[in-house]
Image (cartoon, rainbow, N blue to C red; front, top):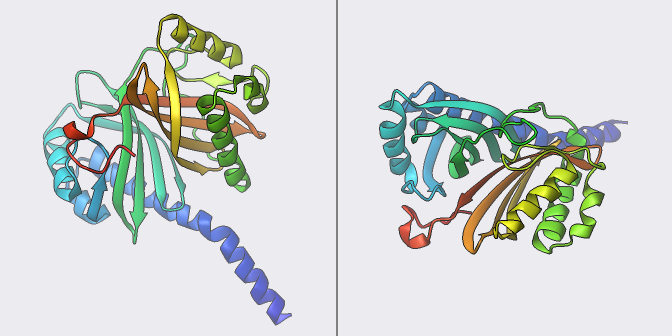
Length: 279
C-alpha cells in the first residue's frame, strides 16, 4: 500500500508540475509587465529580468542595458505611454501576453510578447507589433473575445492541431484539407481585413490574390500553448518581403474556433539593433 501511494503521488506530481511551472511563469511575467509597463517602475527591470538577457525585438539593443534605455526614454519619461494586457498564458518557461501599447508612435500598437523565464527571472524576449486597425468586416477588433483558459488536458493535442494546420495548409498549400480543421463555417476571425467563417477566410485570401498580394508561410519557429489557446510564431513572406506571423488560435472541441494575429515585416540583419534574429 505504501509503495502504491508513493507511486501515485509521484505520478500526480509529474502530471501537474507542468501546470504549476506555467502558473509560476505567468505570475512572474504578469508582475513584470504590470510593474514596468503599467506602473512605469524601472526598478522592475533589476527585480524581474536577468543577464544574459537576449533581445529579439530588432529595434532594441541586446541585454538589460538596451531594455533600460528603452524603458527610460519610451516608457518612464513618456506621459503618453500606456499598456493594456488583454491575455496571458504560459507554456512551461514561456510566458505569452497579448495587449495594446500606446505612446510608442503616432498610433497604438497591438502586440504579442513572448518571455522566457529561467530561475525566476526573464532572460529572453520575442515580440511582434503592428498598428491597431479598424474593426474587421464582422465588427471584431484585433484583441476582443474570450480570455479564459480552459481545456488544459488537451494542450498538447491543441498545439499539434495548430501545427498540422500551418504545416499542411499554410506552408504546403493543401487548402482542400482546410475544412477538416474547422467546425463548418463556425469560425471567429479577428484579422482586421477578413470576416468570420471559412467563407470569410476564403473571400479574404481571394481579395489578397486579386490585389496581387502573395502571402506565404515558410517555417514555424515556435508553437506555444496552454489549454485552448495556441500561439504560432512563423516566418514567411508577403509579396517577397520577409515577414513574421504571430497567430493566436482558440481551440474548441478539437477544432479551430477563433483567430487573432499580428503581422510585421522582418528587418534585415544589417539594420537590426541586435544580432539575435527575429526568432
